[in-house]
Amino acid sequence: MSQLNESPHTINVTFSLPPDFNAPLDGNNETVVDVQLINTRQTTSVKHWRYPSIVDGQWNFRFPHRLTDVSVKYRVTVQLFHNGQPLLLEQEHFVIVHQAPHRQTLHLSPIGYLYVEVQEPEMIPPEQAITISLHEKESPDVELARVSHDEETAISFYLKYDPAHVVPGKRYALTGIENRYHQRLSVFPEAIELLPATRPPQSRLLRAIEQWLNEPLRLFTDSLSKIR
Image (cartoon, rainbow, N blue to C red; front, side):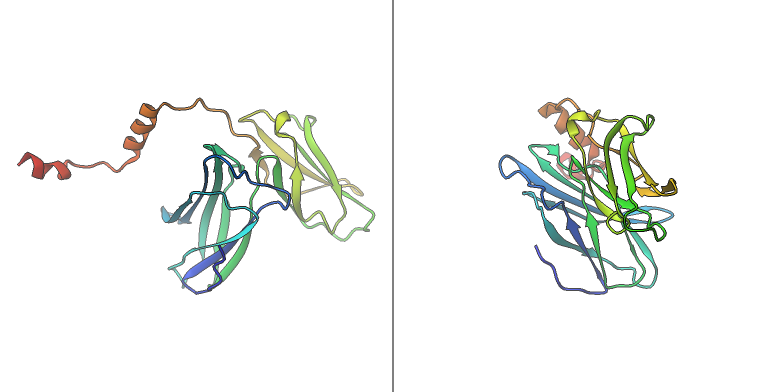
């Protein structure tokens, strides 16, 4: 899915997944990408893309860029579905374009992996570590994972956790500490739902009703000709 053509009217992004993440090949699979232009007044849909398979590894994607004279902020959401169940954490990725052509890498987080970005610390000796803790948002003492990195490797990485120990629908947070002086470091994301809340499967009738409600309201224009 390589799209190498770069144009001032096109934004190119590369979606990246953990090297050891293996997407399922069986069953019913789908990849969905939604791009929206964020404006102070309104949000505009730019591109909605669905693909009847799971795209994993690193893959390129592009969407149209029409406002070339101003800085623009796009919100990108991506989801992989296997038999109707999401495989990625629900996250919003942002692409800020000051000048086109523009290329950016977006790191996706499958369930069980969390892509972490840490504030770059001041210079410290290589033997001094930075500790990152993944814990319950309201109870920092209840940890899911804890890792230590030196200064060079703590800027961005995938933090693995066990989904079996996660409460569905509960929000978790990250804390970063520079071990030498015990100073807090900014860590992204600040809070996130690591496992979606389980929802009962909808019946075929309920799905049809929901789809009908989501369609644009019609003012009976389609049926006027039939009435006449």
